[in-house]
Image (tube, rainbow, N blue to C red):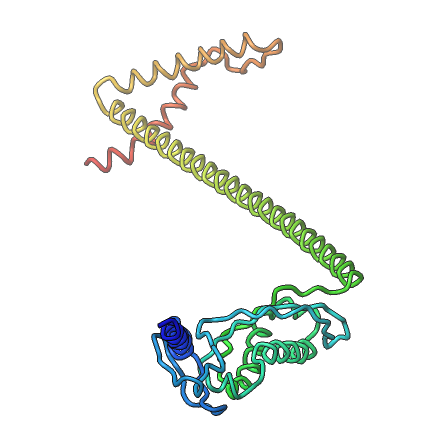
Length: 313
């Protein structure tokens, strides 16, 4: 009875061991490579799988998720013979588990080494100044170089990113001086452009001011000329109207006698003013003959009146 119990226990243990050896659970986004008697047999996807005991075994386990490979820093020589230290990071993914297992011994190490050699190659084709400007181009060239070789490894290179580009300290000092000089140059150019624009603005302001002043002066003179012309016109019209009314008054009854009296009064009045304003006075030879002076003035009025009378007739 005790021997039977021992045999049962041994069989139970053997059953558990066999189940552990034959029942395989593959996680999501993973693949297992199964070999039968040392030869590739099949690739297991996610889920539960039963293997043949002592015949099948899981030889390789591959994750189909995107992986990150850190590329260590290395020294590269640029086209202008400057040594720079460059490091980066590589992103890759297994797309064929069988090839990744049998196409290369260690695809991680192979991708890392190929990334370093490709980076040295592309860095050696450009100058130091352009390494900072063309990072995107450098990344694409490294990805193209690695991806072409990695097709036989069953992996896909997704992208490569340069983390740091560190030139020697002496070069960094020279670049700092160059950048400082460039900034000072831009500042000087900006200052000169500002001064130039300021001078242009002031000149344009003075020009517009002079134009406005001249336009104002021109308008002022035009207004004054128009005012003077209007004044002359009004005076002429008033004078003509006065002359016309005088002529009409002379043609009326008693107009001739009134004109004689007015001329005589004006003569005496002006002669009196002459006596008040001057110490020396010139007296006409025929002082008492005012009637002759009035007759002379009236003869002028007659000559002026005659054509008008002729016109009315």
